[in-house]
Length: 178
Image (cartoon, rainbow, N blue to C red):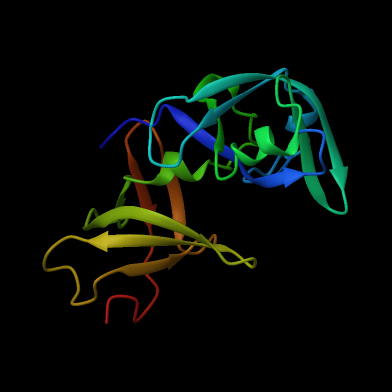
């Protein structure tokens, strides 16, 4: 499993106005973090290493959307060149989560096991449904005929998350493997 080095927190969707501001869709539970940032690290969508680091001159909300003013981007043309760029932070820059909460990248790749020790498979994605998250698990051969197991992240199903042990202990609800 590849170790995550950068975590996505926003995406530039285009210019705003004619003074070089960019409109950003936040991909973080802490969008207010942009107001405290001093610099913004931009990435091209298909490249793992940073494309550029811009000092942040300002962050503001306008009609429910986030607008950023990056130093050196002075007009609509400059802002347009940043369209589709991703804003990421290093692991050491993540906002702390309350106890019992995890970032999705921390859960991807964890092995799901039952309390009796049956190995089910590994988490490949986390669906955020609104009511509760759902772990998408790629089952090991022979566990089920399904291509994926969907585990609701509720108290009765997810019993323990052990990041150090790289596993999640889950109680299967009746019919989940059928």
